[in-house]
Image 1 (cartoon, rainbow, N blue to C red):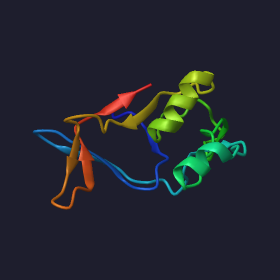
Image 2: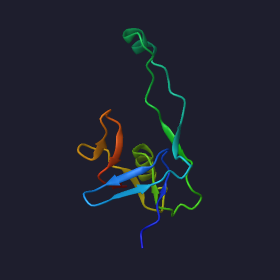
Image 3: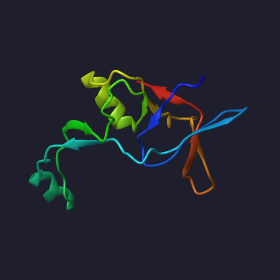
Length: 119
């Protein structure tokens, strides 16, 4: 019996190996991160001539199932947040898009990955 996993990314995730392709369809719900307002850096904005702000501070993950023991596929950013905050009881996966793991088409778009990363 295959483990049930809910894909909380906005697109299907395809894991392509030598002998098979496993597709996890998008569930229709997307997990995202909320963040606090970033501060504008006027000195750097003036020096570079483009707007510069501080990096976002993430405050919560949204769009997650009510059952915190659900096994989920999310973006790497959401996975890192959940791991840091130890706020998820199920298994958290993300597509492994690291060097040599992403499979791309002729235009350079990712069409699949060779494996999932577990957090």
